[in-house]
Length: 246
Image 1: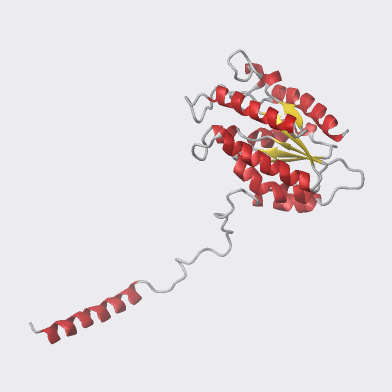
Image 2 (image 1 turned 90 degrees about the vertical axis):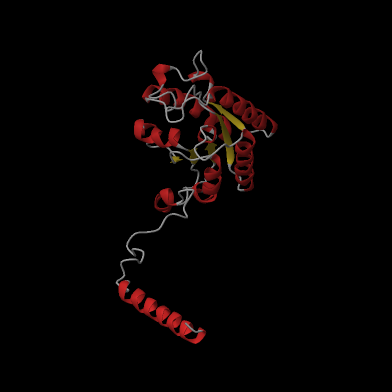
């Protein structure tokens, strides 16, 4: 077969292939993204979670001592387990289950600063330690806490930092021995709070047992408080808020 004939056959195959492709995959719209379902793949920090609620809340009233609770599942479950704690108070619970400290930092502008509170309670670190998104260090957690604190100060928001609740083991991530890691993180948080004249909210001390886990009577799974646990948290939380706002 000569070169000219080979080129002609090759060109014919290309044309035939193109025609088959056009006939085999007509533009029916089946492969187009649905227009009625919002694509939230870029919303890694779950900003959509409280966007509408924040707008409904609006700006604080004159003299209102608004406090935002920023955290993950510990805070999110609080308002469903003991909803009466938040009733008739200027407390806004902005917990999102599973979030690490970096996600809290990304939400800080919308879910804290935008609400113009007098104070913010930052509960961060447990999901980082649980390795929900890889192996994150205490230094990573502290950098995010420092960034949130600095943002709050710029907007004249009082900062309440939390010593994290004790955890002996994570049911979904067994064997990583978090107790010592939480104790080490809490030491860093306490030192930072002291150095920067911030209010410390100690959830660890009143809830810890002899294993450096949560007291069984205060928790559902060793990580999340039950109603009795939230009652203990409520007492120390109210004390910390009063101290921060005095």
